[in-house]
Image 1 (tube, rainbow, N blue to C red):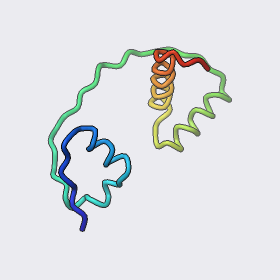
Image 2: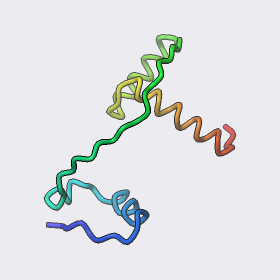
Image 3: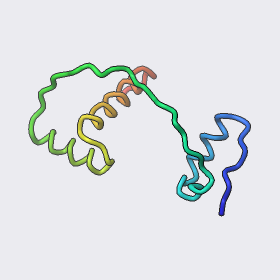
Amino acid sequence: MKKIPEFKSAKEIAEFWDTHSSAEYWHDMEKCDDVFKRSPLKPLSLKIDSNMFNKIKALAHRKGLNYSSYIRLLLSQGIEHDIKGISY
């Protein structure tokens, strides 16, 4: 059985888990009671045509997300993209 290696930095941790499956190390993990809180969500009304909505739902399903989480993900990625000054 594989053991989780010792890491010297957060960067090493991130690089390791980017290239390894946690399933291979399940036996070596400890239970964690950490609670992660996020900012409250603000409701938003958005009108889109039904064809686009169906595409969003299908793509969200492929990623294992509900459609509202997927829309938030797309918005977040687009905003970060624009902040970095990358043009489409």
